[in-house]
Image 1 (tube, rainbow, N blue to C red):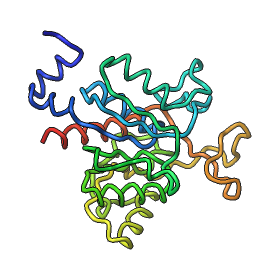
Image 2: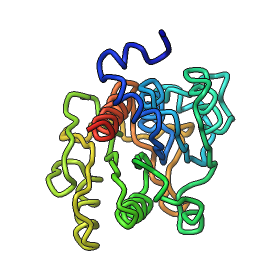
Image 3: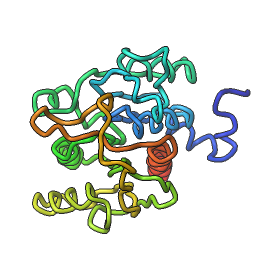
Image 4: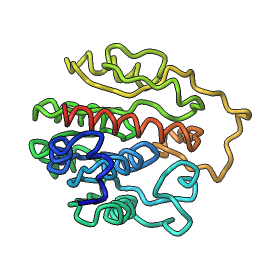
Length: 243
């Protein structure tokens, strides 16, 4: 009988589709990368998803985030993503957590229940904590490295964190993972050197990231780089779950 995933079944087979249907995946960060991960996993037949992100959709998300529309501005990203997934697969089991993954919130998440963890968050501290908890639970994790200030989606690669190069975020993560003895960390990263903005001036209406003390300007972004990173991550999750 035809269903939403009939074409996927023709490609992967019924047994693989059943494994995907039964898997539970947690996606930390539902932004430019994580939103596309969630979309692709839902369309691939993953029926149990945990979505974790504290942010609401903002005007400046519209250029790159799949859930960002003028009609969704101001709404919680996890709620918008859940609605979208349920419109793809009404039978899906979606749990949402409108919070950041921090020391004070990590107790909410029992990693032993997950078949896969996706790290699509921005901060090094949260990434290291996610990797540490995934390793402690014996669960696979894949991490997104920097997708900002990039224009060439063909330069993404999948590698162990120890084998990365060029990407500034990957360099920091490589050093920090080595310090902590964290090995076998799969990442998606780009060898493209960060693009220099045409002007050093930052428009007053560009959102800032980080604390008020750091006041670090948000990186430049586009529609076709973070989306590709997200789709690559989703493909790795699917391949690993059915292998």
